[in-house]
Length: 253
Image 1 (cartoon, helix red, strand yellow):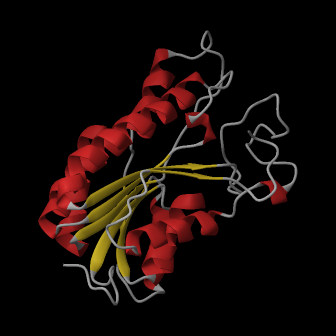
Image 2 (spheres, rainbow, N blue to C red):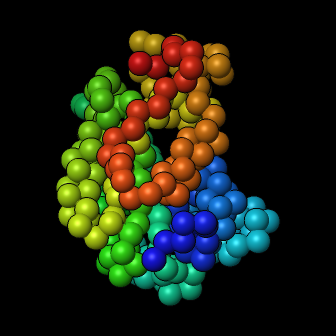
C-alpha cells in the first residue's frame, strides 16, 4: 500500500529519454521524492552522468542503455528494472524523435523508426510495466505528447501521427488499468526550453525547435514538478489529459 506520509519512498520509476531535457528533469525530480529511477537512453556516458545526478538525492539510479526503436528488448529492460530497484510505481515515456520533411520526401524506414520510438516503445514499456503495477495495487504512466498531438503540421507527418495516436493509446491503457489503481495520463506540453522539438515553419521557431524568446517556452523542471505531483496525489481525481502552455504563449500554437 502507498504511505500517506511519503507515497513514493522505496518505489521505483522508469524514465525514457532520461539523459537530457524533460526526461532528465523528471528523473531528478522523482529522485528528490525518494524514488529509485531506471534511466533509459542511448549514450552510456550521458546515462552515467544522469545516474550520478539521481544518486545525489541518496536513491539508486540504474542506467539502462536502450535503443527504443528496438522494441522487442524493452519488456526485458522493464523486468530488469523491477528486479533491481522495484516495485515500479511510475513510468514516464518522455523520449521522442522526429525526421522532418514532407510526406513525399519521408522514407518508409524513417517513418517506421519515428513510429517505433514515439508510439510502439511507450506501448511495449506500458505493457511490461502494468503487471508490476497491478501487483502493487497502484501506478502512474505518463505519456509525453506535444501540441503536435492536437494539430497536424506540414513536414511533420510521422511525428504528428504518433502524437495523435498516443492519445488513443493512453485512453485504452487508462480504461484497462483503472480497476487496479493504475492511472494513465497523456501530457501535452507547449514548447519547452530543451533545444529540441518539432516545429511549425510558419511560426517563429528555428529549425532546432528553439524559440526566439525563451519566455515563450516551458522550463522542463516545471513539467517535471507536475508529474511528481501527479505521482504523489491520492488515487482520485484522475487526470487523463493535461495541457501545459507557457505563461506567454507564442512561437508555437
